Image (cartoon, rainbow, N blue to C red):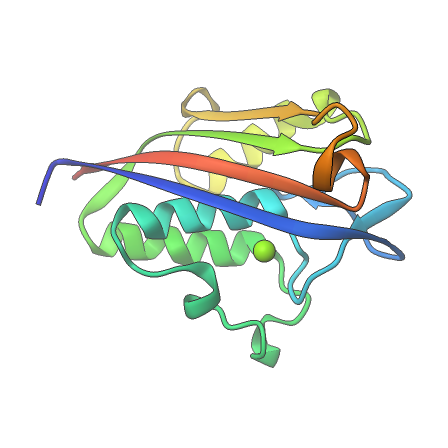
Length: 160
Ligand code: MG
């Protein structure tokens, strides 16, 4: 196997009232939150799929089925740490991660540093190796209509 493996992940969750908004493991003050079986942290879900994808280990739905009550309202950071444990078990570690969240609102810029620090903790690395970007889609599509938030992530893994 190659010393380097690249992985890509993408996820979408619907915005709804009466839920907390959690992105990158950070609770963000907003009038709505994301709907899902877990805490619906769309960024962490995209990162998990990127980690699993890099080693062709399947996807988040196969690893943590959303019909399993064990994962009801679970903190997605727990799932992230478990996915990264699998990466380690396969003999790889994270070289770097880049990600983008698309949300029309709220403004995410003030929370980016906390997300990078939180993700770095779970991925046993430094925030310098974890990039989180936020953008809007100019009022268009899933995020622009405020129906949901999307996130995508790429990771590079290197052999230990
Ligand atoms: Mg998801």
